[in-house]
Length: 35
Image 1 (cartoon, rainbow, N blue to C red):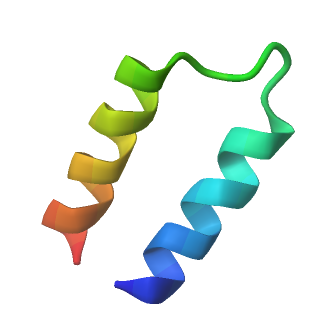
Image 2 (image 1 turned 120 degrees about the vertical axis):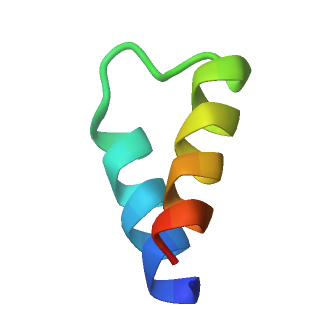
């Protein structure tokens, strides 16, 4: 789970422009479901 979140943050930081909070929440939910 922590690894998924770390990967998620790297993915988010690589985005230009940065993702909106709503998109981030969706990504976090998807990562949590993947476990």
